[in-house]
Image (cartoon, rainbow, N blue to C red; front, side):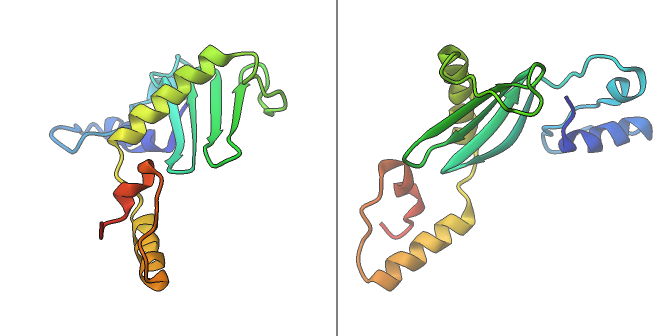
Length: 144
């Protein structure tokens, strides 16, 4: 398992540089994985975390979570099913809950998407009224 964010620390390491006091990175040096076939130091890949959908992989498990109603949850074991043909969400509720918990933890640390903030403000102004937003979207309504 290697992610795009691993390129920078890997290339810096190959060039003999040091990451030093840079901003915190989500990437890890994966050169030994690429060059020697050693196990990857990466334990998860975050595909996306957005207000209405998210996807994450931990080890062999990948969760795709569509949060808009009707909610849809997909869970795949990538090692056994690389083409993602068998949704195991109903059979693995504990794994689903653990990955949803991790997504929520990461979402709590994330900034709200600025495009969504701008569009909700614009819609509110065009409608000339105040939107009744679900509690998780109230933080997007900057004029409240």
